[in-house]
Image (cartoon, rainbow over all chains, first blue to last red; front, side, top):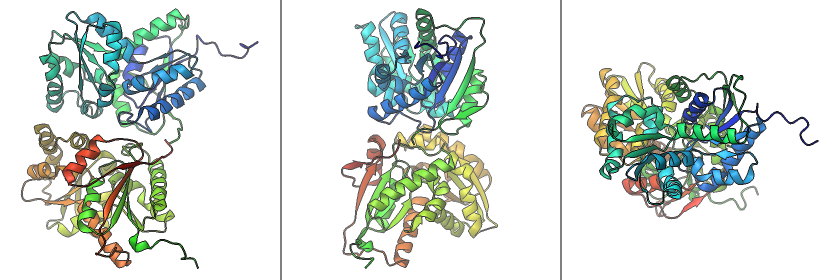
Length: 275
Length: 275
């Protein structure tokens, strides 16, 4: 009786939650790996960036946006934001009955599998870096690994300006990577959902001997596995798509990301949150 | 009868409202020009930055924070944020009975008085630049002036990183100023409350022939005039001070600004807003 009128979970969308539009790199990876899935993305642009906010505040945002995704009938929630993954996922897993996957655990797993010399670098925003979330996640899999984290506070603003190919961006990336390269890392985690947009510049600075781990791509693989395990994958005869809603109107970087990622985003809905 | 129990308006604090802590440059200018005044500063760090938000949202924030300042018995409200000055001041002047002064009108006035050749440059955030607020304010005083505005989206992040003396900062400022210098400006408005912290770098890039107009300093002068006109100046035997409240905990740039500006900020209160 309970199931009457419940929509088919297999056909339900994957809910994606980001503080802004940087998580569109995750949405793009999900589209690549899971072309039959419908994706519903909420960017909390009214309250972006989360980086400087307290854990309690970010937990509250996570639960609030998670609720909006469930109201869209999401079969699972992907937290496509490193800060929210570091701070809000545990609480969201506590309060929601659908699976909640962040970007940190999949990236950490991929890095631990990838490294040969056990020396892993992580670049991230200041908030993610100081949370220590990647270190903890990597050490839970590879306790003996050495993890070196560099906060790169200017990289998001540079990327949001579309300065993917620019001497200023190269200069800053070189500066941020120098201490990691000096530690002899062989693997570098791009620990922020914006960074895949600057992969070429980061690869140039890192050199050919360092493997880059893209947390967006690894997150999409983890989501695919998880849906498969739970028999929640959409039928491959279905044609998936991407719907986007934002909590405040913002267009400029959204369109930059759309172009760079080859995403097809139509009309953007506006959702209301308490701010 | 109405006046019974009303606190003495002359002894009341000047309320300062900013989206974050950049407006501390205005607080510092107020301390210099009005050492006898008590200043109560609220930085809306829970919802910073305002730059990408809609007018309606920023109006609501302005009225909300204005109410918190009035609850502190503010005798006037200074909006120490260019975006909020451009978008929220008209609404705040409508709903509040105390004077509300922004940073744009005083900066525009000073620039119009300063220029000899009638060619004025403005550097600002993208939101302030695209609001056209400086152009309108300058043209209302000097209709024949030519105003050239350059959005400098990376300047705030560079300043928040404390990169006041850095080749990357110089490179970006040179790039931002180039089109303004090509227009033959003789006056340059620092149209963002963060920018006075980088005055030395901006002056280097602008060269010795361009007058810099610091909107923080000109705002403080305008506040002094306004209080004097309304007989609301604190007695000069009083020793003023600065109280700071934030809407979410954030310390790093607050302490950078405190050091750079020679401000004395003690304990910081936490105020609650709806976000």
